[in-house]
Structures are given as C-alpha cells and as structure tokens.
Length: 368
Image (cartoon, rainbow, N blue to C red):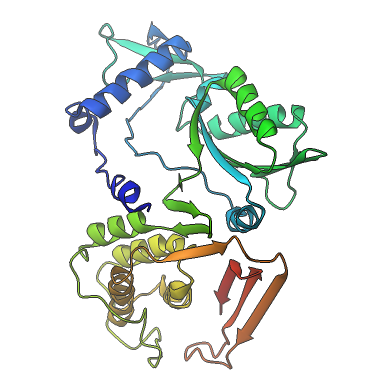
C-alpha cells in the first residue's frame, strides 16, 4: 500500500545552482532559504577589509530524508509491539540558531543581490563551518534537558524521558528528530516547545530518514531502502543488469593475490562504502560486504567482479525489507557462530552474531 508513495520519491537532484534555478520547485527553495538567512540576520554585507580572508560558498541541493540513529532498529521493534506513536520533525535553518565567536567572512551566495566588492560577514553559523555542528548540538541538548530528557550514555544521539503518563524517546540526527512513545501529549508538547525556540517543520508520521524508508500497518513496521538501491544501481550503471540469485559465490575463496590489480581502486571503494550502509536493512548481503571490505587497500579484478555480483543480487529484490512484527514478544535472543581459519591470507577466523527482540532482528555483525 506504500508503493505509490515510494515511487513518488525518485527525484533527481540538481548538481549546481545553474541547473536548480531552472526548476520551479528548486528556485522556490533557493528564494526561501535566502529569505530565511536574511530574516535571521545571518550576515551583514560589508566591503572586505585589506588582509581579511574570505571563505567560499556552495549551494547543495538534496531531497531531504530523515534522521538516522544507531538505536533505530531497537526503537522500531519496540514501537511495533507497543503500538507507539512515531513522528518526525525537521528544525528549520538549524545552524542559524547558533552564534559565532569568531570573525568570519564569506563570498556572497549565488542569487543574492549585492554591490560589487562586497562580502558577507557572518554573524551566525552556517552549514559547512567546522564549529557549526558543535554549537547547534550544545543548544539542542540544553533545551531537551530543560524539558526533562536524559541523554543516553551509550548513544549521545538518543534522549529518553519516563513519567507516569508514558515513555518517550527522541532520536537526533543534526536537524532531524524522530519522536517515539506512547504519550502523544508529551510528543506534542516537545514539538511545540522546539517550534517556539527554533521553528520546526512537522513532517508527521515517520516515513523516511537518510535513505531508510518506513512503512507501517496493523501487522508491524517494515524498514527498507528501495530508493537508495535504485539510485545505487543507476549511478553504477547496473540499472538494467541481469539479476543474480545469491550475493556471492560461497564456494570461492577470495584472496589478495588471486587476480590482477585494478588501475583505479576508487570505484571499488565507493561501491563497497555505499553498500555498507545498505546492509542496515539487508542482512542477506552483510557477510559478502564484510568479506569484500577486507580488500579495500589492494582490490583486484576478482574482488570487483564479486562486488558487481552484489549489485546484480540487489537488483533482483530492491524492495526487500527488514520487518518488525507487531505480534512479537519482547524477549531478547542472540546467536553467534564462527568458522575455522577460513581466510587464505591471514588464516584468521570469521565470527558473527545477531540479536532479536522477539522475532524482530535488531542488530547483526560479521567480522574477521
């Protein structure tokens, strides 16, 4: 039932300002961003004084998906069983809420009308500044603590609050927040407070965050990466490849010497890096990705062929999902295994483990 919604997000992002300004939706976004920067008094226009350095600027155009946190799978598994609310919000122009202590000058952004020879003297933080994330994190953390939330010691991106009316969790990724819990009034109170302090965009029910797509029904919650996979296949030229039935040839023993060196190993590293993130929802490729990651320093032709096989495999089922059942219990179960000195280069073993909350997989790892 979420297929139409999923198909609707296959957007092509502009690579530069000149391309974006030709599209009405992106042109509107540019004007809205410049208006927000102006209203927030992010900079003052001034002539650049002698001896002062000016930093560059660049428009980055991204279709926004929503926040990630390391405890996401656990929260979704619990939310499915407890029928918790799952909401998401986006803080508008996040870093503009953070003041700067240093004197910083910037080239005016494209689209801003200025007189010749002028520069922007920053009064507040902007995306891309080294100190921006730190300043914003301090401010957001202080507000959440004022609201009675406790920062998780094992994952600083998670804040929790327990009270007689229910339990609430907030997952943070820079300016994106996921709110989960069984107390809707508390969730609405947090959203209103953040809106009063920073101005937020209320996205509604959780559906996307950083390439992870969420679909919910009475049976449970499905987590998948269909758009991420289709983008990966298109970027690597495997959009119309012949699918493979398995992610790797399990009978083959890959080594660092059995093949010819690649003239340029950067493409191999990019493919493996992007698929490491994909393994969040695709445990079926986790072992293969872990195996190929061992050759990032010296990949050869056989390794590249094996990496291409994974692309052909995910082409076979781009919408495969990680499912968190609403009818699961909350018992924690773990499994582990290892082989015996299987690596032909180091003679080391490969160990692996996975943990479930009831029937829902929440974490897994395979490591040499």
